[in-house]
Image (cartoon, rainbow, N blue to C red; front, side, top):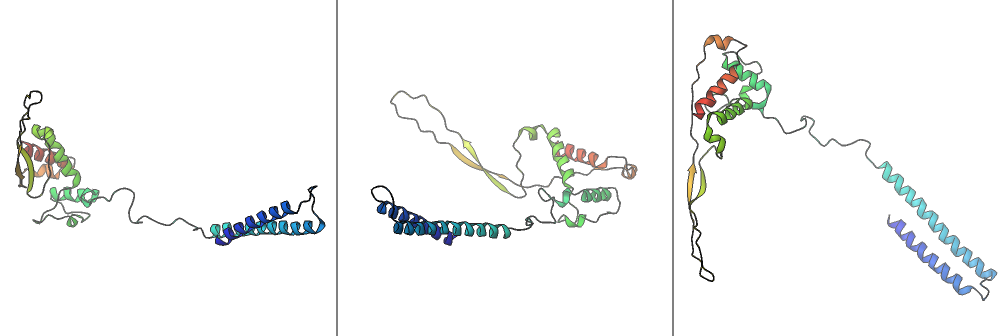
Length: 225
């Protein structure tokens, strides 16, 4: 590319020189002598030759750029992942199926529960099951449906206003009455809430019984009351 720019500048200077020579050598009738005509023709031929060389180099540059392009698009994503956000193991259908088998006293089929064990040796509930309990809490607990719910796994301190400022009627040009609010701190801690749901053996053995929905609603009712 630098060579092309260099030749373009050289051609521009050569053309300016040719025009200047032509203007300076014209006689009163606007004609050139045979000798000056030969010189000008040579200068013009040099300009044309430079133009052809520039075109040749530009074609070469275009061909090089075309040949240097990749023949296929690069792989930028992880082949092991599909579109969307990675799915939690507790949201997998296999995990949910194994969890229900455990509830019914059956052996797990997919053996994926061990990937998400509880610290006490149990198993974490499937994500869908947990969401159904939380959704049921909205219906069982009226306060929860209108309150701000803060999820926490440990102690959390929240600043709150203990007293508020007070507005005062003030006369024109009178001094403002200062009113300073005060702040306090409330602590939200994590506590364990438990419930025991009893189900008959007959219902556990009945594959048509919606065990998951029944337990989720029972937990939601117990936790929400």
